[in-house]
Amino acid sequence: MSNSAIVPWVRKRSKPTCASVPAHVVKFKEVRLYLVERKMGCSRRSFLTQLARTKGFIVDDILSDDITHVVSEDSGSSSLWAWLKGCALENLSKMQVLHISWFTDSMREGKPATIETRHLIQDTSPALQEESASVPVSVISQYACQRQTSTDNKNKILTDAFEILAENYEFNELQSSCLAFRRAVSVLKSLPWTLQCIGATQGLPCLREHTKAVIEEILQCGRSFEVEKILSSERYQTLKLFTSVFGVGLKTAEKWYRRGLRSFSEILVEPSIELNRMQKSGFLHYGDISRVVTKAEALALGNIIDEAVHLVTSDAVITLTGGFRRGKEVGHDVDFIVTTPEVGKEECVLRHLIDSFKKQGILLYSDYRPSTFHVSKLQCQRFEAMDYFAKCFLILRLEATRVDGGLSCAEGDNRGWRAIRVDLVSPPMDRYAFALLGWTGSTQFDRDMRRFARIERRMILDNHTLYDKRKEEFLTARSEEDIFAHLGLEYLEPWQRNA
Ligand code: CTP
Ligand code: MN
Ligand code: MN
Image 1 (tube, rainbow, N blue to C red):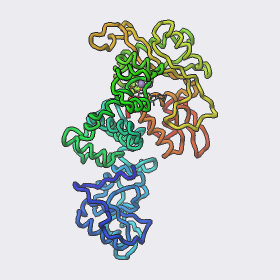
Image 2: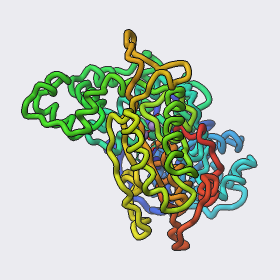
Image 3: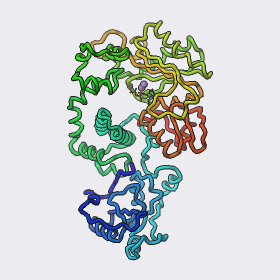
Image 4: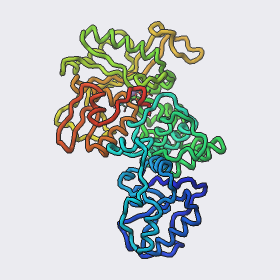
């Protein structure tokens, strides 16, 4: 983020200083200048840059969080500040934003001039004053938990392309590039407007040079050469196909690919490949579980779980989470939280439920993971790690008769049922709010909320708890609203978390 650089109002980016420029002796290491090109103009800017460098000043061509002094010839402070705030700088509040008079004074004195009130270009907009007390000064936050993201994605053409690039980086184990594109996807998803020219990316956080280049290409040509190359590559196609099977992760897919396998039939006839139980079910029900689940189907499953759970535990609480709680129309599975008002009683609920599904003849696959939850384990896990609650990953048989409006069937399919992936998690009631927040997602939203907690608040957030490192205490929460409040964040409804 901090090195995402934006040069204002310039078509052609002036080249960063490179080896061909004679090196100057740096006299003032603690001062790093940035000259705003608007009003100053390109040639005057390079002249002043050279002048300052010969006098021992560091002048960067690119605006980054390392800059200490921003110098502008623009007397309209509001447009300058609006632009600066759009640059997603984390240190903007610490930077001196100065009029050119400070620069000329400094050149005359041969050292950074003492800053006087007349040098300051002050921000007069009320928004900043409110915001400066809290976190990043930017029109659009770099954190998804400070942006509203509905299911209505106005930039699908761009985000689809970015998802492919991100996935390809993941396949090549380049995690940080993958994350950079995932963050860019999430920023674009939050925009209430469609990006139509590259200039409109000014002030958007989390867009690096590479992401901008892809945007520019798609806006100009309607497609990205890089994305098309990936889509046509055999390796991408094969890994994408293999990992689409329930139970097949990247490692396994890679292993099969390296052995020269390219299709499902090659895997299924290969005698040396021993599929595990999960993968066997994945292949068996592939047609059904690779198709989307509709909201009507999710609700029907909710009813089935509701009926089954209340036969054993009359006061159990069932909550639909995951994508459907965020208002999505379709999903790849259905996620539920199942708990009981009395802490401890929830532990056996999932096993009872699984027994009930078996008796009804609707259990096609079940992987039950008992709880490993202990207060002693709190606070030491990383985000990607699984949570410690009892959970199960299921494939259930859903009869068409149970679904309002019928099943979403493949053409010519008249079986009258389909298989659906269902995830159930069972946290104790005192952990419910944390589990609900974590399982509602989206994954990118959760990731950013944890990052926000860690970086901006020195707190550790996960699916079980919130820990304040400064106060050295655990913070309790009865609702998601409590967690947002502890973090000093404005509450976002589930349907605003589709980051
Ligand atoms: N999750 C989790 N721990 C797991 C599995 C999932 O915390 N062991 C969280 C994920 O981080 C995500 C949410 O549960 O935030 C739902 O996961 P998933 O079903 O994979 O994604 P959805 O957002 O529901 O998307 P889809 O509609 O495609 O199912
Ligand atoms: Mn889901
Ligand atoms: Mn899930």
